Length: 52
Image 1 (cartoon, rainbow, N blue to C red):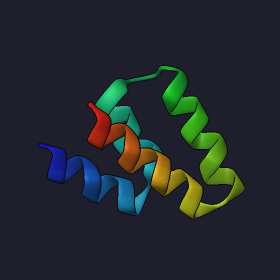
Image 2 (image 1 turned 30 degrees about the vertical axis):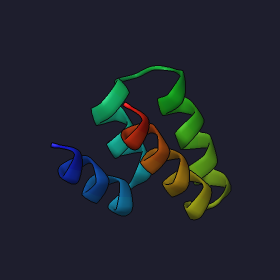
Image 3 (image 1 turned 90 degrees about the horizontal axis):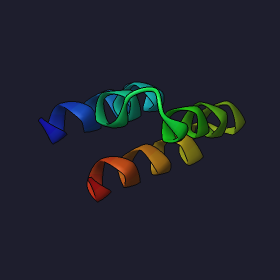
């Protein structure tokens, strides 16, 4: 299941975080990071998926 989340994270980082943690603080933080730049959002998404 983590492979699917990582694939979604590469395409659109907030989707991968949403699949992992739902509509929590990490989801909104990832949206903000993705708006500031694709790579910060991607790194955060992969970190959240790997941490859980």
